Structures are given as C-alpha cells and as structure tokens.
Image (tube, rainbow, N blue to C red; front, side):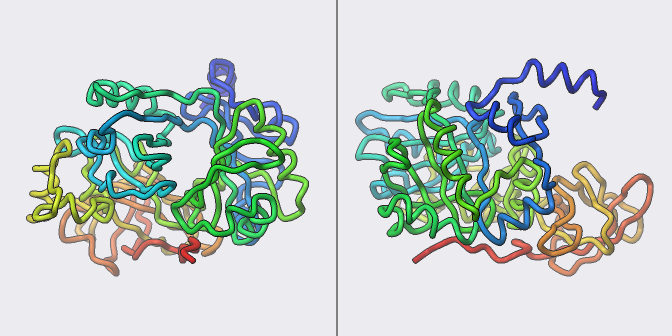
Length: 379
C-alpha cells in the first residue's frame, strides 16, 4: 500500500480508547477493520509472539463489537439464528457460535455469554458488527438489542495470565475455560471471561472505555506482561488453528466447509432434541450427511518461505485444487504454516501439494490443526 494511501486510511480510521497509549508505547499504527490499531511494537512480531507463549501478552481488542440482547424468551429467539443450545447455557457460561445465512453461509462468528435468565452478552467481529446488528434487529423483533458502545475490551493471554488475574481478582481463580464473572480490577467494574483467541490460557476483560487506559497501565506494571500487536495476534491464532473471519470463512462458506461442525450443538443437529430451526439448517444438514466439495485444512511448508492468503494450491499435474486463506511463519514452530480450502479428495492429512508463490511451486503438506497444543484452562 502506498504511504500516502496508508496515511489517508489512518486519518479516516476510528480510534480505540487506548490509541494514545499505543502511540506512547511506540506502536506501529495501521488501519484494521475501520480502526487505527497497533500491528507491532518495538520488540517486533516474533518476540511479542514468544512473550505471549511464555508469559503474558496484553491485546487491545476494543474494536470488537459488544452487544447485550435481552427480553422474555430471548434464548429461544437466538436459537433461530445460532446453531447452539442457547437455552442450555448456564449463567456466566459462554459459547463460540456462528450466525448463519439462509443459504447456510457464515455471516459472522461470535461469542455468546449468558449474563442472566433473559440477558445475553455478545462479542462480534469489528468489520461485521454493523451488519450483525441489523441482522439481529431484523430477526429478534421482540427483544431489546443494545450496543455497548461505551465499553472497551482487553485480552490478557499466556501461561502466566491465570496467576496475574487471580492475584488481582480472586473470583477469577475458580473460572474454567468459557466462563465469566462480574468483578473489579483496580477498583473498576468489569466483566472477565476465561477465554481468548491465541490458544493459550487467558482472559478477556470488558470494562468502561473511560477506565481501560488506567487498567491497562496497571497491568503493564507487572514484569510478566507486555503489550502485543495485531501481527503476533495473527500468528498466535494461526498456530492455534483458529479461523479469521473474512479470510478463512465468510458468507460463501458453510460451517461444515470451514471445519466448524463441532460448533453445531448435538441437540440442534438432525435427530436432536431441538434439531434445525436456524437459518440455512437444511443446507448444513445436507452437507453433514453428504459431505462437501471443499474443506478447510491446515498445511505445513517445506522450507521457511511464507505462503500467504490468496495463493493457489495445485497438485502434481498442475491442476488448481484449492486456495490459501491464511499463511505465514509460525514462531513457536520455527516453520511456515497456513490454512487453505482444498477440493474433495485432497484434504487428507499427509497429502503433498504445491502452493504457487510468485510463479514458483512451493511444496506443502496437509497437516492436522492446531499446529501447537491449545492450553485452555479446563480445571
């Protein structure tokens, strides 16, 4: 991207409540999902990545959309849009899910947390939040949908995150993966969940935008912590085999093609107690029964040449059999890795193929994901 274009894009970008702190800390700011966000700090992407794997990384994810959906019968209403057992969630329990389209595609992926009997907290992707809101408003006519625009969001990730947050908010020590609690950090009200998108144990902290800078500065006083940018966030989620909306899935891909069949609750599948009822269910059920023509897979690269999103994948005869959707160097592995959609018959682990990078054939091998073990705290 041309420098002038980058400046113009940054000038027009929204700012999170931590923008000034990012600049103060030397963050390299870039436009991302309509916001000016730090891609890295002085230490660089590899060191930030390794710090998160070894200690604690702090991420500003305030660009994500936060919403509260409430009302009588809201759980059942949400089940018309999400293929999970919303009504079965316990108080302060959360679940990963997808908003499906009428054709079985993925409108967005999100986290749903039950705050009370008739109150659900949603965290959605920044780039799709406006569309998600309209979608919810069109389908949840009898429910109250409130955008929590005065809230910021921090992700505190890494193997030492449990120690730190447990010291500061003892209530969090009892939390297991995908559960949350209303508590305080440094005398500021917040909602903390044991979750994140790095594959590590960690927490996500929803806090008032007026308090997030104070909370972040206090967290950064601990020698175990470091501020981490978007670059390392991407390499961490890639090593963990986690999808990035807009790259690895979108409205043209179904949960089955994306390898997210596990995100469809058993009770919502064909033959389940609450089978179907969500948008695109017929298409999704047919794909579960008959299979799909393409599938998202992981792959490793022979050598360290990075294979980026958009690269074609070919077989030995030169036939195009897929396309890369995410790719780069995995610092933990010391190797280049990626994810791609491959035609049926090529998705088996161990299959050798080639990616076309600047006209050259780079050998790749279909691999099992996650590439590194996920270390979520399950008790």
